[in-house]
Image 1 (cartoon, rainbow, N blue to C red):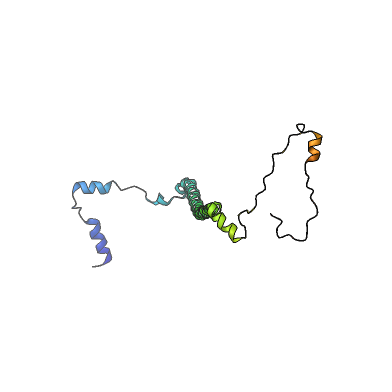
Image 2: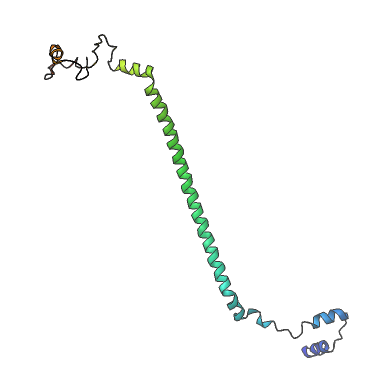
Length: 155
């Protein structure tokens, strides 16, 4: 069978499809589908696409900043916990150093001993209540240059 006879048969073929199907196919006749990729339609959506791209970049930059802030907060919280633990250790040490029993132990270790002699001094006199004669009878102590022996200076 030659090509020309086939074409002739196709042209003369009788449509045996149902009428509703034939009408449905007929609705598409005359519609131009070549304008689907029209550059004018793309130009209408170009600003919208650019705006969507800018918004997407802004959202991604915001997320990156949030992640960076979370890492900084995590390191700050770790440092804060370490500082709080150090503060607790220092509070305990200060309380240990203020303990009277601990102070007595450290004083003995450094050579401090209980007082063996206590001097009791009279109350100071108020000016104007004592006569000049009574003041001249009082013994006076004058401070002199320090001596060569300094081992008992604190007594």
